Amino acid sequence: MFRRLREDIRVVKEKDPAATGAMAILFCYPGVQAVCAHRAENWFWRHGRRGLARFLSQVTRFFTGIEIHPGATLGRRVFIDHGMGVIIGETAVVGDDVTIYQGVTLGGTGKEQGKRHPNIEEFAVVGVGAAVLGNITVGARSKVGGGAVVVDNVPEDCTVVGIPGRVVAHNGLRVCPADPYRRDLLPDPTLSQIGLLEQRVAQLEETLAQRDAKVEAKVQKTVREFEG
Image (tube, rainbow, N blue to C red; front, side, top):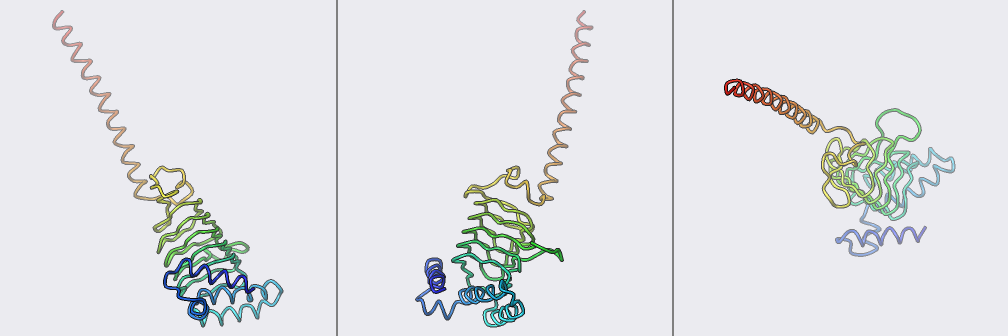
């Protein structure tokens, strides 16, 4: 337990330049407090004391502004920075060394049963106000931009922005619209319209080229007849 707490304090020192010392982190960082409290709440949840676990999670929510369902699974060194308004659902799985900023929702998309919340793999970052919804996976080391709404899987080492979320970079390189890393995401209506326009222009150019070829052939035939 104390080893996990030391890890939590160390990761805050590494990721937050405003962190001044262990005691300040322990008493002034609600993200650390919420993660520590969740470990006890999750233990009660897994051992059949679910009513007590839910009650304690609401007490934690009252004092920290962070709502983590006691059934959620958090890895080691999870850093919730600032944290106000963070919501993590019952079947969410957050991997090791994940960073979550304030206002993030790891939620569901309806009243489905079973696994209905996202998996956030190790070293991923979920930006301010982002919503990651449904039984999907955000790959390791990927970044979800602030305010994004992600409803489909995100590959590893990608950056996702927008509503709905779309991949704009992979391994630090900008992704073009036709990149295969975008194929599992929701279609972009603007790009779809541009694609249709490009197809239409290509068809018109082909039709004009055929017409020009026919006119040229007629002209050549007329010239030969005149010369003959």
